Image (cartoon, rainbow, N blue to C red):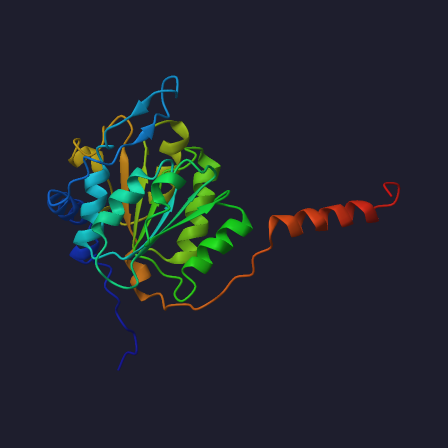
Length: 258
C-alpha cells in the first residue's frame, strides 16, 4: 500500500480573490463612510485637502465584515481614513483591533479616541517598529488582513510585504496603488508571480467604482496561512533614548575620538 498522501492544490472558494472581492463589494453597501474624509492629498501640489472619502473605503469596511476579520495590520495610516473605514466593519469580538503604522502623526487627532485602534509611529521596516507592532498582537501573531498603502517604492514595499507576511501570517492582503508607477507595477508582478492566479486580482479591473484602473487596487489571498499555528511572543523593544546612549558610548570608545 502506498503511503503517499495527495494534497489538493485546488483553491477553496473562500480564498478565490474574485469571490472575496465580490462579497466585499456586496457587504460594502451596508456601510456609510461618507463622514470619513481622506484628508491632505498626496498628489498635485499636496496642499489641497480632500473632504470626501476615498472610493475604496466602503470596500474595505465590506471586506472586513464579509470575512469576519477582527485583527488587522495597516501600513501607511496617512490621516486614518482607511483605518476608520475598516473599523466600521469590525465585529463585536473582544479581540477586534487594528494596528496601524505611519512615520507621521497626521492621523493622531482622528484615531486617539478609537478604543480598538493602536497607532504606531515609526518606520515600518525598522526593528523597533516591527517589535511594537508584534507586541500589539503579542497573544497571537496571526491576523486576518494586512493593508499596505505606504511608500510606493519597490524595495520598501517589498520589505514591508516580506516582513509582515512572515511576522503576522495574514490570510488576505490588500495593496493600494499597484499601477501607480513602475515600482508598484514591478512589486505587484513580483509578489504574484508563481502564485495560483485565482488567489490574486486587481480589484479595479472588476469594480472601477472602488478604484481607478490607472492606480489599481490589489487583493491577494494566502490560503496557506490558515494552517499557521498561533504564536505567543513578546519581542524586546529598545527605546530611541537607549539607542542614542549606546551610539554615544560606542563613539566615545573609538580610539582617536575620545
